[in-house]
Length: 242
Image (tube, rainbow, N blue to C red):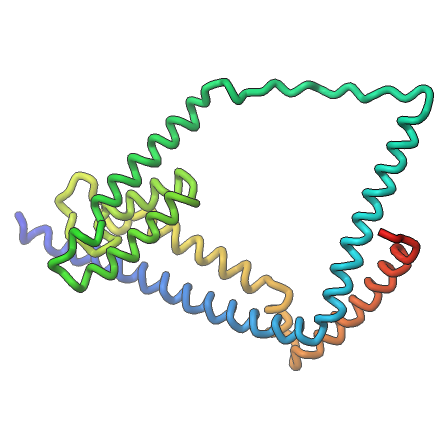
C-alpha cells in the first residue's frame, strides 16, 4: 500500500515546487520593477525638489486659510440674532456593551497563533540546522500576521503551516495536512504577488520608463505641471497672513 502512494507524494512535491518557483519568479520581477521605479522617482524628485516643497507648503497654507475662513463665517453666524445651534443626532455610546464578535475573534486569533507557533518554533528543529533558519523566518511571518494581519490571513497561514509546506515537513499522514494543490496559502500568495505586479506596472512613472525613449524628458512635463500649480496656489494664498 505504501508503495502505491509514492507516485502521488512525488507529484504533490513537484506541484509544490512549481508553485514556489512561480512565487519566487514573481517576487524577483516585482523587486526589479520597484527598484527601477524607485530610482527613477528619486531622480525626478532631485530635479523638482524645490517646486515639490513649495507646492506642499502652499497647499497646506491654502487648506489652513480655507479652514480659517470657514471658522470666521461660523463665528459671524453665531453673532446673528436668529442663530440656533444645530441639533445633531446623538451618538449612543457602545463602550459599555459587550462586543462578543471581537472577543470571539481575538480568542480565535490567539488559538491559531499559539497552535502555529508551537508547531514551527525554531526550538523544535534544534537538531536540524538546515531548518532552523527557515523556522525562524516562518515564525517571524507568523508574528507579523498575528499583530497586523486579518483573521482570514492568520487562518490561511495557519493552514499553510499545518499543511507541512511552510518548512517542508512530511505531514502527509497528518489529519491536518492538505495536498499541495489545495494549499490555499501558496495560491493566495501567488495571486497577491500577481496583483502587486499589476499595480507596480500601472504606476505612471513605470509606464514612463517603458514608453519614453528618454524617460528623463518626463521631468520637463512635471516641471510644467508644477509651474502651473504653483502659479494658481500663489494667487490663492497671496493675501493670507496665516
